[in-house]
Image: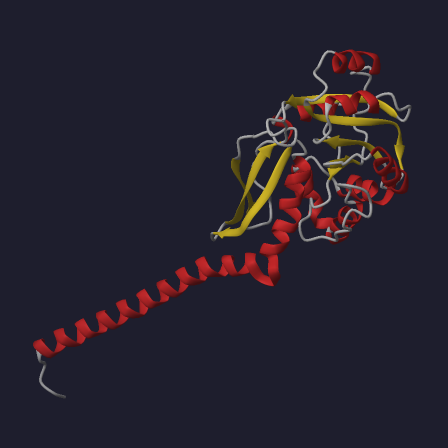
Length: 293
């Protein structure tokens, strides 16, 4: 046995402690990387970012039919959530300027949608007009009087409601005959709540028909979007005041109960309300066309 050397012993102990500490730090760093990167990789695998904007971003637009919504780039990913931002501008008659706000749509690690802005709480006049589709409010004779006292060259934002819902070919024919353009079409009668509405590019990666369905109508785009939805999406869709059953039924039937018009003048609405197929017109906003001589 060699003689005991306190100096060598201390060096050996220090080397052992340093080695053990290094191993522990490496292990802790590896665990931290796994804990951080693992959930992030899990959330973004198989193109989940794109599907998040396809499903949740589009649902947000349907949830806010009184706004022009643009989905910004996706996504901000953390170990516990994934989110993206949207820009929302209240709809006004064409040519009018509206303030734009930015909002965040987030989804947890377990796929649950967080608190949603706007929607039923937006409480714009256009939202209220959509709530009233199918009700007895805005009687035709009262709307005639309102239109009569407004200058005819004002631009209007209005919800044109049909006496009976039009089938897709009937809507196309009607819009073509009247030379009307729909910002979005109401595919559901739901008095007292926001109905399902859809425009030509509500899903901005869907099937586009280049107005073959009528100006502003996007039924094929709507049907393409509902085709990508899965049963497990239903819980999140309900956060947007939607459901798979309602969406699939509305897309399948394709019945137009009303449409949102942002381009017509008061004068043209006076003519339109006399059509027997028009149940009523709900005015949401009017403005001067400042670019018109």
